Image (cartoon, rainbow, N blue to C red; front, side, top):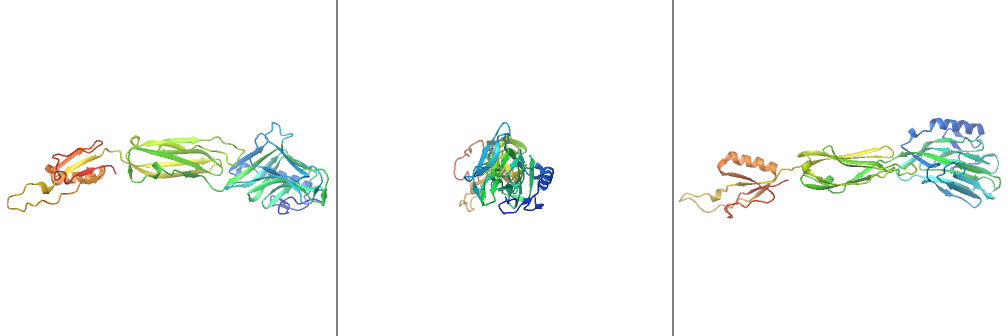
Amino acid sequence: MSWSFAPDSATVVCGLIRNRRLTRASIVIAALAFLVLCSPALADETVQVCGSYANNVFTSGSVPAISATGRCPTASYNGGGFGLFNSGNSTKGQAGRWQTATPAGLELVGATASQLVSYGINDDQDYGGGFYWAGGGVGTNDQSPSTLGMVFPSPSTYFGMQLLCGKGTCKAPAGLTVGAFALYVRETSGPTLNSPSGLWQTTGWIRGSWPFVLSGDSPSGLCSLSASLNRQLIDTTTSGQDVSSWHQCAASPISQTIDTSRYREGAVGLALSAGDAAGVPASLRKTIYIDNSTPTISLSADQSTRPRRPGRNTSPRPPAAARLESPRSCAASTAARTRRSPARALKSRWAGSASTPSPASASSVAGLVMCLPA
């Protein structure tokens, strides 16, 4: 008699073989089919576990009569990897397991077990066992191939191997060992980019020095992070890839000071981009408005200060208020005033601070136009 090994008590081989009595021939045929179908093309990233890599994703669970052993990495698969063995008399339903669960944003679509050894399992004796995932699994026995590929009919958030007692009391020797796993993973949510302050948050016209900060992340980790202004690179950071972990990359944040005088005036593009370990790109773009023109002051005569002919009403008019204009709008308004009355228009450049108009009387500064950056 063979025993159920999957959590849902169904023996499933890639959704095609559904039979509680898996024959040795069917196991071999199914395994060969898996080897053809199972490839990294099914997934966005591959997580390598044990063999020559560390174990950063699997955890064990055991009972007194079934032990779970693990040794990763190891120079040779022999004697290393994951193991489940009966170590005494167990009772029905007791199981030892090695299992992994994906973090948020990742799901499993397949796995390959290498250096597989199975004995005393699904051979009409005491124990059942094999590999399982959400909605299915595949049993093993002493005829199982040393490399077994598994393609999941639907994505799963967990995967594991187990040795399960299927009788009232289990005494017969049994064991299941795997030297290394390759887990095929799909990313369900892409990278995020974050620039909470400084240049990215500006509005309107800007000039001078501005801080720029950029960071980001994704379920599989960002392997590159980059920013450019007007197609000129601000900075880029990269990260090495640790294929033994779910989160395989961690590109460093970017922090720079941007001097607008290095860029042309007007509307320029600020572009952010990133790429993660699953090969998923991300990008953001906005327009920055740069005005590097030197501010100016424009003075215009006030009609209320002109001499009056005798006999006319000589009561002073209210002085005109000074007004502030940007270099662009100031140039236009000054040109218009000059066309109307060239003799009464005066322009001067302002270098850092406003020049004091002369004569220094309240009426002489009436109508003052101060040209400042937007």
